[in-house]
Image (cartoon, rainbow, N blue to C red; front, side):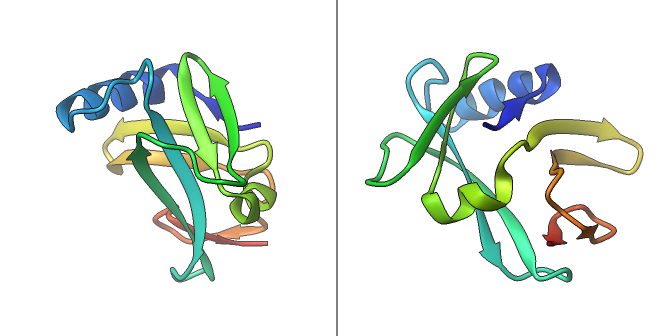
Length: 109
């Protein structure tokens, strides 16, 4: 399960609308790929369709899809949005990450 904070929900809805997506029917695709200064990095984009093998979740009225491989790395993660002085953007609070980089965009297990 992946959770979505209230601030992240507001930003997701805003960005989806700006990009021509409808948050009531379309998805946020969350994934993990190789790269980044800690070995793995997060991938976040919008999608209109599920792919075979995708895991589907809904939290805080946001529909999330995750491919099977990425799901193992993301179990229990909460998607947050930070607009503070240290920068703005989505933040993944991942309890599975042993180490994260300074920017928070990559991690290792």
